[in-house]
Image (cartoon, rainbow, N blue to C red; front, side, top):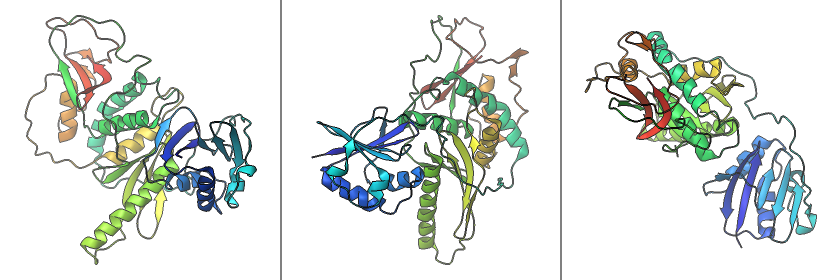
Length: 377
């Protein structure tokens, strides 16, 4: 008999499957692992998340074994009946089928606070920041990021699964790393009806399968919940430390390793070494208008700045201004991008417009070969 196990926290449902899923076996397993746990949802989430070796998935609907951490309740849906038991009882030791009471739906608490990181907080900043390059990157990328948030604003305004979250996070990270291509449209075409991004559209570019992505001197940790991102960073640091010790047992280990914790609602800069750890106050990622907050923008840019060699060879000269500005940021050359070209302002395109000979170049932001929904002319 197999079983599905769900984790429901803050409106997001994680699920996985278990081959040996008899009720008594599952009850014994969960009680043993939750024995002595506190009622803090983050602690229970980390315990249950690490319990199963298989990859967790996400869905919008709740099924068989659902840990409703907002209500501190374990809900069990069977083929013949539905029941529930408080997680406080599960933490006390093994429970039996007789301990399960009929399921009575409870409303979710209003205004459930989003999980964040507890104080104390530390003011951290990257050393040796190139302020000129930072200003140049912000001039180009701030508008691209805000326009990206605007084009896909219908997604974060409602529920979405982990694959969509990772696609959005991957796009933001690649934008900050200037790891995108600019498709320049110069040939005539007929206009097509409709917007570039529709309400029913979801991101279609490559999903990021890795939890930790290394960019320059910082590792970006991706998780919908920032406490879970913190645990992933700690685990990555342990693996990195063991790997370094194998290479050189005499190497100093007091240097801090820097991480950017990137979650659905917050971002935070985190540093850890073998003696201590510290992190900044989590910055809210999006504001009420579903645009990036100034605090998040500042943290994202400072954390992801990297030193790039300027002795690169320019293989081709771009026609459009966006690609030229991007190359200028990569090489740290040229003037600050003012979002103007040939005396006209460069604006975000809303639709696929009619083109004729002589129409200004249209620059489309793409990830690999997939259109991001952003176009400028």
